[in-house]
Length: 530
Image (cartoon, rainbow, N blue to C red; front, side, top):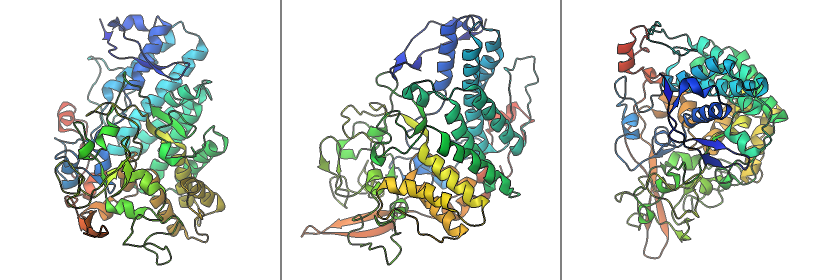
């Protein structure tokens, strides 16, 4: 007899909280006879969606480096492949659960309306899981029913276009079935609805239009991506949250489109702990130390890049008059941080100085999304900010990029999408300079993604889909800031290389399938170069 075990069940209730509802081990044959158990099964599927992770993705592009050995450092060195890949994602067990739900829900006694709503949610979740594989591997096997031992289990991978078409069709089907809203903002953020499915479709279409997945350069794909994202912008219920610093702290706010829900003590993570300097650490620290390249990408408060002689940038006071998002994202030397209300000193030989054990390796620490009032952080626990998988600022950026690539030159709608983000950031003037060429606007949009979406697990995949990862990463050693405090109290600043030289070759645009999976399924042809 087949059984489904639920060790921890979290659901969004009418008040927007996550409830713990432990159950006994339940025969699968009984689950679809009970509306409560069907809902429990659905809640369990949401728990399969990845949320916070400690220190991998923020440290494998040009955002940050970590103090800790192994892990992301192996990725940077190029020490990964078919037998060892920390970025691997192969959730066919979770997909089987989705397939089982979709196969059995039709015979349940729940009403057609709620049944269709549930089907839409599971189609969304299955699409999300397949998309996370496609962006890693390209073509993959598409399995839409629960496999049995009597089935042919040696499944071939499908083409990249076939896989994208499957995900697109799944999401379009979900959009038709899902409600506009569940009548509660907390639930709308934690469960898929019509608009979150459409926003996610906009992301999928953007990837499919991008050079890595669109080798023939079909410009119409960009047009389709722009159209869907514009629909969300113009007709969806979302808007920019007014305070960039608090986007990750104000749970289920108007900018969140789809988030992985957390609530202490039922489901926790260590985001606040991971970001601490060692002098305030409790079993963890310095997991993401922002790189100088990211710091330099933030313009001045007047919106002008620091590389321009017109910007007013002063290298002897490098953090003055910068884009406010810089110090809302990064702890710089002397920043006041944490519930103690004390400054963090990361100058050479300072209390949290660069190069000391367990301290910053770049001269910076991460502030973004941290709860500075939190006094409960410890190791991998103590925090419960939602993991925001998709927010409205990304939709604006997705639209701007897709529309710019579709047109011969940028139109006013592209400027407007970027200006809205820069205005919220507090730039003055916030307007992007007019008269940009398509190429110039492309660079503007890409830099805006770099700083606005930093540490939201977007940058690595952006560099890959644009096929700029070899140029940006391979053979490069990134930089940190070494600060010297002099006897009279003033500081001097020196940019130096930090960490390992990056290895990223052409074959790494598509990850290898695990050798274990290749051994199990000889029809699963390995990706080129591996």
